[in-house]
Image (cartoon, rainbow, N blue to C red; front, side, top):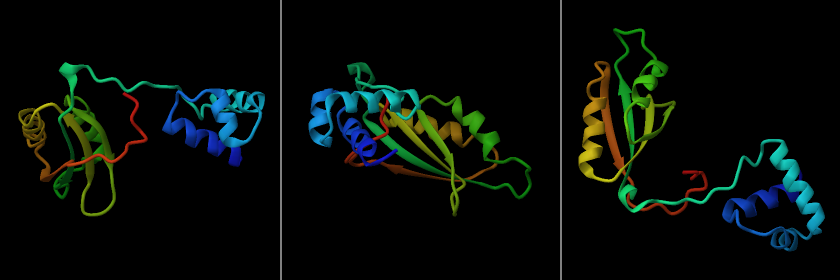
Length: 149
């Protein structure tokens, strides 16, 4: 991947609706060169698809939060992987990462009400080895380049 491919990807991340002509103009290549590059990136699996982020009124997300989980594994042989399978079943949890440092696992949650967020917290507190749960509510999302709903 060269500088032209990188530029094409940057532009498409910002606006996947850009036409080939607009892309060609912005990267200073011909339309046919840009078309070939985009097809190559699609074939290589670098571009996985093009998405419209649409929210139905009844699914409007009001509450977004990060939950930091710390487990007491001193008397257990369980690891984050075993908790992840259980946490995956909780509605509203969008992703889960095992991370380094003081926190063992970080979750990202989207709900439409505080009651639903509290229900998620209550479900997590049912995990016997959960030692500490800290909630960080999102106040403002400035940008999100990973959004693929």
